[in-house]
Image (cartoon, rainbow, N blue to C red; front, top):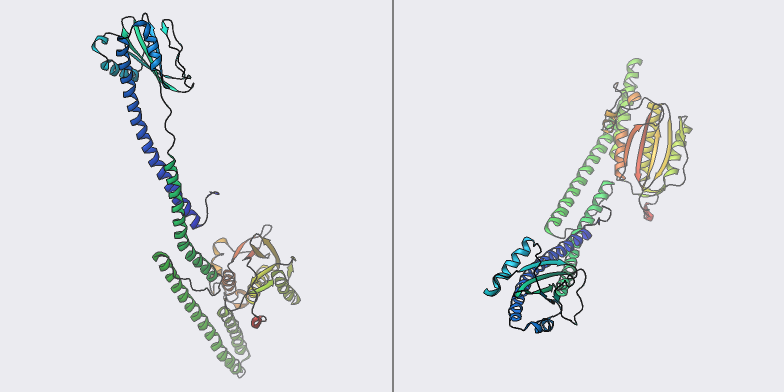
Length: 467
């Protein structure tokens, strides 16, 4: 829903305000309907009682004075007509018959044989009929859309009184109730804003810290404030961040130590190989040591991993172009499509390593590498396309796992160490981005998309400008 607010604070205020407004409206409507039903019953009782009393009074008034008496008793909501002659029956509804029976029971005994009728009409009362004598009244006629009740009661034989009661308009909506509802909404909104602030601020800090952690940066400790649930979540996040940091540092130090420790025996073995007299055996041992050296350097590169380099503002297009130019100078089939300046805050050394790994993979397994840079809303995408056999869809996630090589010979010259794409994935995720492998749009081959979100510029400290 586009009109629904997205922030927690505004949602809380809107929900509480709507709940209070609807509850007040429901209560007001309930009392209003109850009062209307009670008022309706009172009006019916007064209407029947007034008609009965007037009919009895008309009996004792001389015929010539009855019209004047009826005129004197007219009011804002009452109209009277004195009808002489034969009564003309008009069918009544069940509700009208019920009121007529109640009215007849209230009349004196000598009116028991007379005709009593009640008709509920909408609009102005009907005009006077033949035999009616309508008094001249100074009261204005009722509006055309009002509800009126016409009661016909006998006075004497051959004469009947037709009383028309126009229902008065209902009372206006109580102003006090509206003011109370508005005041309740205002108080609830202020209270909701206070609670939302206590909840939303720690959650916002938690989200910011989580985003920094996802980009591989050092996240600040989340303030452990607010309600118990929010505070416990902040405590758990801080504890998790500390544990993850310690684990990553331990793994990085372990890999780095293993890589460095392997260099010493490798160097000693290279010296010892020189004393091997068998040329064929010496060549095999030398080849094995070369593979071990490559694997050691890959482990050290993975140990350096991500997060150890400070972020700074660079031109991504210039960085990618320099990588392509270096490889082209080495005679590699690499082409660069060119791109305008693409400012990006990142760890340049890690990003250079990731892009170079992708380009070298494309050259090694796909015959060539076509490199291009694409600017999308909110991010940049580095595309590296080749013309090789590609990677099956079911293997495209597995190749990012450490030491996984789709080339089954385990030969470093043909299958690599199995750490290149793992390192690319770690660097991409350390920058808040991702790496996607997909088929090319045209022809055979694979496309690797390194997606990097744009970040605000980070001004480095003077002491770290050249790190």
